[in-house]
Length: 236
Image (tube, rainbow, N blue to C red; front, side, top):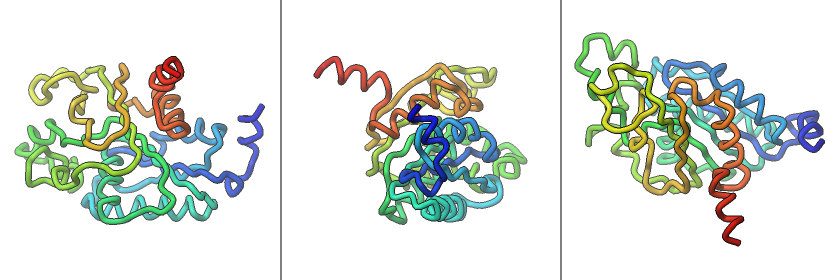
C-alpha cells in the first residue's frame, strides 16, 4: 500500500532523487527498468541520456552529471543518489574529483571499470577502435598514465555490483580472472568503497536484472546489500 501511494505522488513531493547514468554506447532507455522500479520505491528519477562516444570523460562528466543534478534539484530532491552502469561510474568518480555535491546520498555502480578495462588495453592498437569507442572509451585503459589511474580512492558512500557470467568467447585473450564478459570482477573494485557484491549476470544486461535492481535499491535505502543486512540482523 505504501509503495502504491508513493507512486501516485508528484515528483516534487519525493525528497530523494536518483540520477541514472548509462554506459558506453548505450542510451537512457537501457536504464528504464531501473527507473520504473525506483519510482514506487519512493524516489524521483533523472534518467540522463548523454553522447557517450562523442566526447571525453571530462566533458561527459560535466554535461551528464550537471544535467542530472539540475533535474533532481528542479524536483526538489534534498538528497541525490546515483546508480551508474559501466562508464557512468567513471563519470561520477571524475566529477566528484573536481566538485562536491552538497546533497549527495549514496551511489551504486554496476559493472564499473574502476581499475580500467583490459579489453581497452588489448583493442587500443586495433585500427578503428578509437572511432568505435570514442574519446571516453579509449581513455578507459589500465595504464598508469590514464584517466582511471588518476582518479584515486572514493570518499563517498559507494556500493559496487559486479557480474560473474561470461559469454564472450574472446575473453581469454583480454581479461584475466572471472568477469561479466567485459569487465573483470577485480577491476570493479575501488579503494574506499563501502560494499561489493558479485551476481551471476553479464555486463550488457545487468542493469535490467531484477536481482541487481533490488540490491541497488536496497543499498540506496540502507547502505548495505541485502545479504549484508541479513547478516547484520543475525548478529544483533
